[in-house]
Length: 226
Image (cartoon, rainbow, N blue to C red):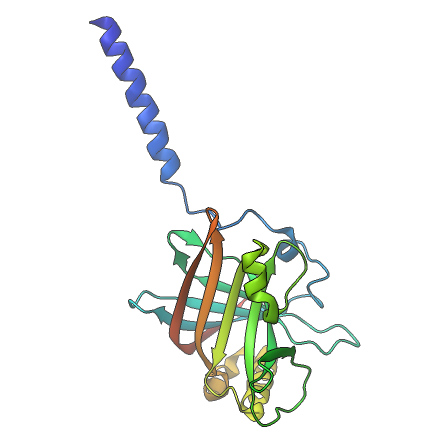
């Protein structure tokens, strides 16, 4: 009888340990990535002190906020980029941070090229991509190939409300610059900031890829970077 009670106690202790382990905060879909936490060649400079928050939802109505922290351009660098975070769980997993960059899509050629302050030609639209791979490859034209090779860790595609309007994107950039100088101007530039339509993302998890998306984005607030 004592042996049975002792054995039962051991099983209860083991079950308690397992339940405590399962109750921990969800882990990121992939292990810690030093490229975004400690800096790397993927960044063109230091991140700014302010973060822009946009509020959205998934297709079931669950909140899906995104935050954009602009990476300051170094002297001689014209590339535009943001550190993007998505406050959303995909099948219980946190989504990775990524470096978001603007690309011009040529419909005739069906190819993307990095936006470098040039005006759009007829048939061209602007899209934002954040791509995280097991190497330094971040070409949106090769996303399918990255996935097939198991190279892709995480990707996000941000669609804009006025993708064919160069003026709308310039106004967006100008608004973020003005607000960086004076955060109290956030509400004054609401219309210029209101350019994000929806996002689609894909994340590697347990030897397969999970996909998701969120929509109905509006500017929410600007906060000091944590």
